[in-house]
Image 1 (tube, rainbow, N blue to C red):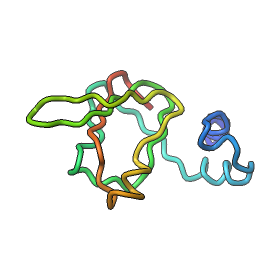
Image 2 (cartoon, helix red, strand yellow):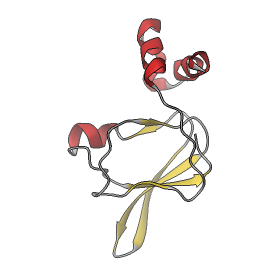
Image 3 (tube, helix red, strand yellow):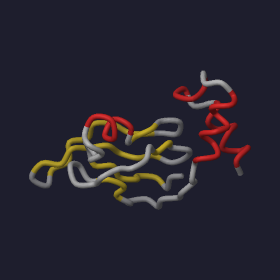
Length: 105
């Protein structure tokens, strides 16, 4: 499993230029999870994130929610990440709501 994760990370732009030793270390720290369609992974301003998510498969929608209305701000696809900015700049609280729109890993 770790070799498969290492191979995947090597193709992700965020990790592609790291030395092999660093990619191997990150691969060893990753926990693979599967999320079905419609799963809400984070709610803006309420969910405290303690990890960075790297999308391996599937699609996720990023949006702001005001008075029950969705304002879509982006779509995450394989190779993209979320959570890092929230951890670094927002005390760990999710900046946007993240919902799975196609089964994701």
